[in-house]
Every structure is written in C-alpha cells, then in structure tokens.
Image 1 (spheres, rainbow, N blue to C red):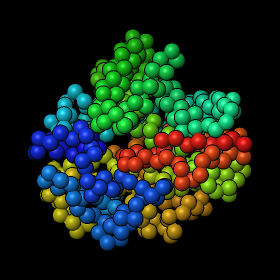
Image 2: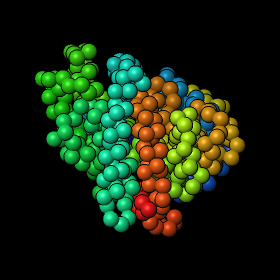
Image 3: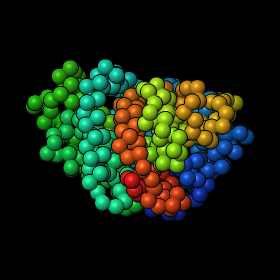
Image 4: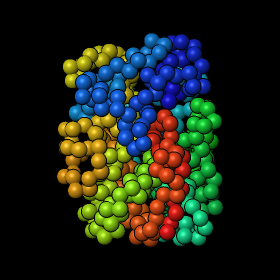
Amino acid sequence: MARRYLPWGPRTGVDVSDLSFLPDSVLWPLRRDGLDPVAEVGRRRAQEPISRLPVPFGVRAWLVTGYEEARAVLGKVDGFSNDFGNLVGSAGVGAQHNPGGLGFADPPVHTRLRRLLTPEFTMRRLSRLAPRIDAIVAERLDAMARIDGPVDLWREFALPIPSLTICELLGVPYSERDDFQRLSTARFDLGGGAGTPLGAMSQSVSYLLDLVAQQRRSPGDGLLGALIREHGDAIDDRELAGLADGVLTGGLETTASMLALGALVILRDPTAAELLAGGDGEMVNRFVEELLRHLSVVQVAFPRFATRDMEIAGVTIAAGDVVLCSLSGANRDPVLGGDLEKVDPTRPPRPHLAFGHGFHRCVGAELARMELRTAYPALVRRFPGMRLAVAPGQVSYRKASIVYGVDSLPVLLS
C-alpha cells in the first residue's frame, strides 16, 4: 500500500519495503470483520465522513467514508491528480514501474486513452464474449466436478474465470495463457513483501509489450487487435500495453474476489441460492448489484493527490494532501437505504460506488457484471448441495488488502 499510495520516501528517506512497522491507525481502513467493514468505518461515517487518517512521517492524509462525500471527491475533475508521477521517488518507486493505463493518468492523457478504450467496453462490443464466458464457466464447473473431496472454490472457480475471460478479451494466444495467468496472479501477492507486486507488474508489462508487438504484426480479434486496426499509429506500444495492464489490474483480482465472496454469501443463505437458481434475468441482475454494493471488494479508490487548496463538504483540503475514499464505507451509508448491513436482493436499486465514480470509474464494469451474472446462477444450479468444507469462522480472509478477498474457500460440492 505504501509503495502504491503514499509519497513518504522523498520526505523521510524511510524504507517501507517492509510494511510490518505500519501502525494500525494507517491500515485499519483495509481491515474487515468477516465480510463487513470494521466498526470504526461506520463510526467515522456517522460523526465525521471526511476525517484525518493519522499517517506517520508528516504526510497529511484524509479518509472519506460518506457516500455523498466520496462522490464529491471522485467526481471532481480539477484540483486532484492521479498521475503516477506523484509516487515516483517514494520508497523505491521509479518511473519504470509505471504500468500506464487509466488509473494513474490525468487529463488530457487520461481523456485521450479512455476515449479510445470506452467503445470496446460497450455492451454491444462485449456481447461477442458472452458465449465464451458461458463456456469458461461450464468448463470450470466440469473441472470441479472431477475433483474428489473438498474443492477450493477460489482457485478452481473464482480466479480462473476472470483470468481466462481477460485472455479472450485481449486476444492472448492459447499457448501462452498459463504464463499469463501466472504473471497476472503474482502481482497481487503481498506475502513476499512489498516488492513482489512491483516485480510481477514489471514482468507482466514486458509480456504485454511482446503481445502488442505480435498484434502489430498480425492484429487479431481481441481488444488489442481492434485498437491497432482502428487507431493504428495514434497509440504507441507502451500505451497499448498500459491499457492492457489496466484491464488486467482492474478486472482480475476484483472479479475473482467478488465471485468468491459472493459465493460465500450464497452458501450462508439458502434463500439466496434459491433466488439465483430459479430467478429470471432481472432478479439475477438485482442480486448482483446488491452483492457489489454489500461486498465492495475494492476497499479504497485510487488515491487523489490535492493540487490546490479546496473545500469539500465543509472540510479544507490543502495542496499536497492525499485523499482516500473508502468505497466499502460509502456503500454502507444509510443514505442508500435501511439495514445496509444485510444483503437484500429486493432492495430498490440505487447507484453504488463498487466500480468507483466519475471519470476514473472502472471502464470494465459491464464485463465484470457479465461474468458475475453468468457464474453465480450456473454455480448454484450445478451444485445445489454445495456447502462449506470448514466452519464459517475458519474461512481465511486477507488481513489488510486494497482488494478484499479470501486466501482460499474450501467447499464440498454435495
């Protein structure tokens, strides 16, 4: 988190490659009580929806926990920067670590790249992937059925589905998909220290640059081939690799975590499984939106770096301050309805922040929805007797993670 978010190095010279020294006063927004945000999130949202986060080393940081306040920050185009340059020089982060893409870019670069990418993520364009998503889900269910004993739903179901879908989207050759999955999952491994994701990120960008070169020679039917055919020299290889890396970053771990945690919700509530198994498309859609709101697997949005003094919801933000929006907190704000601590698929739909908001809202939101709407019903219909293979208290959750999830999810299929 320090390497990705907080510009401590230039000011302090502190080596943050080992995050164990960070106090809980910094990490608590990334912790949960099972599937729920820790109680402090709700307390702050009620009392002070924009509050100081006591970060050491003289960094002024703010945490936004209220829904309307988060929308105000995320929807503000001027006054905040997401540019990767804000991180360069901190804790060993160099310009070479910049993955490119939309998440760490400001206008006009962000505007130009998003204009190129957005047409490829319309429902009309994405509909070509629907048969392959159906097939990927069916293949994973078949593979699970062949396993004797407990099945790790995370490894066998939740992770492969978005990984293989992204392969289809980008046009990764079948012969290279095992390597692609290995690189894509390694970047989220914080167990090897803070440097592990950066190393994996560099490897995956190198791989994607090679893939872009292949597509330049012979554009395929995937996203990269389409961008090359339609825009040619208007976008260079590094930008193409960055966009592909952004699709990978935004679409793999997030969707995999949603699939696993959503399955856990369903396992705990037989009524939920019945609704999904027998419900029509509208019911499935509402269920998915409620799970997205309730789980909010992306716990905090990309950091905003204030470029000038400003006031938001009566709070003065100074130039140089770092602002973090707690999406998990904002999506439990009572302004969205009553009893938000529970999953209620009959809840009237309201715009949630699971995909962010504003011009940095996740461009792949509709693709994620397609995967979730396909996978959940297929899972409960194929294995109606599925149950946890461990006691609920033994499910292993991540301790402090930007993208919340499980380390494993052992289930018995019948």
